[in-house]
Image (tube, rainbow, N blue to C red; front, side, top):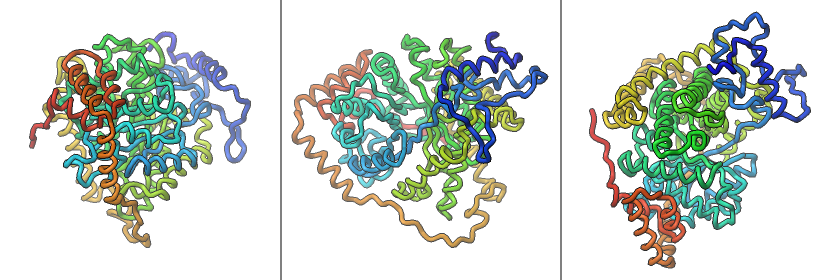
Length: 562
């Protein structure tokens, strides 16, 4: 610990926090309980006699290294988390209507769900896309679809997250071109692109190439954003999909942060300044049903990241040491049986994310275990966050569970388990995190670790050691079957028709030239973002861009393992 921040002296730490709070929070407002009791913005040890509490150095004060209690001295008093609902279905026009509903109902940001052909870098009229267009998200084939997706939504005013990794870079280029066409200065864009290819090999299995060319594209994107779009976050390192695949909380924590360290090493290998590019890294975690374990996981994540960024990777600024994260409630905790119970599960998980200090949050809809959310279910999911934010008063106090013996013990335990996993990963490689991750992917180590955890959970469920209401206990119900959102086959037919019309009217010579320039750039060390932007401006499609790169770099098939 930095001597300046030795927290054995609790009162100086409290004074530092108070100065930060006073500087950041100007509003003259009292915060009270429902019964009228005034509450302090933060609580700590009540007496100087507790200055020797050995835990306090790891707990600290909000807004101070190691940020266990949050990144900001004011917590949610200064700024509540962003309500960022994940949505996308059918075509761009349909999803645009849903976005306007979310924003009109009080959502603070957008999060784009793409359909499977888009996630795999395929056009809607390819044979492999048959029957999948618009079903698990929105279909995006070219920049014109991106124009429609954000029609009437000023991209300079709304932060947008896009959950896509394999073809993330061409999708990003389409987003940039859509902003250009709106007249928005690209340098002012703010949002997040997932781009996290490590978790694809570890858990979700949606990649285009072998790891190395993907890392080349990610490095190019990091360079471009650091130079041209400083507020934009080109990487959202995802633990969500790792947890949904069956990992434990400790595995989600460790695998995710290890991936993040790998991307830090990528940035450093490009000669980038860690204090410049590290603030562009963000994270995406799962909020599962074990309430206190999830809170402890989020607190441990901030502490681990801050320490490694400072002590291992040399980050000097606080912003480069901050772990900013989005949370989504656990899809795998939802049940098809008695789906109304999912409203309760989601509310509990959302509250855990808030008490853990999430920066933005998506709450799942009750029917997502069966289909894409209906409009009513999406509204209930949104209102769940708003009830927590507006009615429960949990925003009044920063890290209200800080100092809880149970929560702090869990935080320490998860941190220790994560550190043990980091050691294992580095030992699999040549001492750095990246080589260990690549070796773990090649050997199937991550997959086998997650599979073992998932098997253990399923065994407990089937033996009745893990009880789920409506599934293996309390199964009687009066609940009626749900009306679910169904995507018409007409969506696919229409998307294919529109795509054919676009190809017929575009300047094919310009498209061919742009794609040839992209192919040429892929054979050099040239940054790929500018030529890819040119291809997108010419209305080259996602599938065409990705096919050029598949031709140059080949594809990747995971080795068979038993």
